[in-house]
Amino acid sequence: MMKLAIRHDVIEAAGEVICHHPAARVNSKNHSAPAPMPPRAKPASTLRTPALAVQRKSAANPVGRPTGGDSLQTRQRILDVAEAFFSERGYDGASIRDMATGAHVQAAAIGYHYGSKTDLFSAVVARRADVVNEARSRSLAAALEASNGQALAVEVLVSKYVEPLLEATSHGDTGWRNFASLMGRLANSPRGTDMINQHFSQVATLYMGEFARALPSMPKERLADGFLYMVSAMLFVCADTGRWEAMQGEPPAAPRDAQAILSDLVPFVAAGFKALAQLANDR
Picture 1 (tube, rainbow, N blue to C red):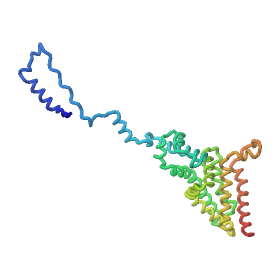
Picture 2 (picture 1 turned 90 degrees about the vertical axis):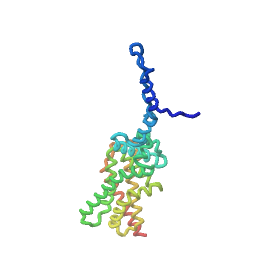
Picture 3 (picture 1 turned 180 degrees about the horizontal axis):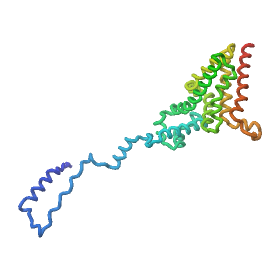
Picture 4 (picture 1 turned 90 degrees about the horizontal axis):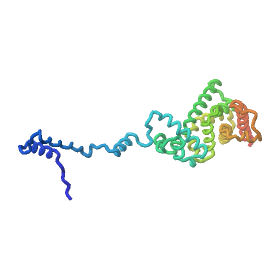
């Protein structure tokens, strides 16, 4: 069936002719005026349907894109929740969907802000690693300046490396303790090796160099052993898993503060470094 194209301009012109024809003139007293022509319909391309409005709104605000001024708060909330999930379940056990639910955002919002799951994981580690690395670097530089560049005592090096994270986790901040727990997971998994190298190796290399100056006869492999033992002890203490309290069989009289722990941990770890050096010399 053929479709006829309606020419509204032709219809209107025809109407004008008919209205002005003598046969169409009537007595206005006895007859009503002819009905006005209906308004011309708008072309379909100018109609704004609800569906079209939704499409245009979606194009202006794609899924996952923040629509308000709380982008920074959203990013921080995503990192906090992701940190908790990664520390509790590990990388493989933490799903983007669960983290999105915990952060009260769409899953696409995580991709918008951080990209892939691996990128999110790296961002979680980098956020606090940068703070710790900066504190360790400043502390080491200040100690070297005070010593006029002379080799530092092993105890000083242990203290400068351990104290920043220990202080950060000692103020009841759940996020920092989640971070310490997550670092413990990374230190014991093949996946974590690359992540730790990416975020911690630069500062760790500086400290390894200073440990080598403090213990010049100690082989590099023994230095690496001592360094890893130090990190393991530090992470266990900072994660605050409750194991220390459980081993006592009853609740402790009072929780230990960071300085009390540091005063025990530093000589313990330093003695371990020196023992390893002595063992290497005896062999």
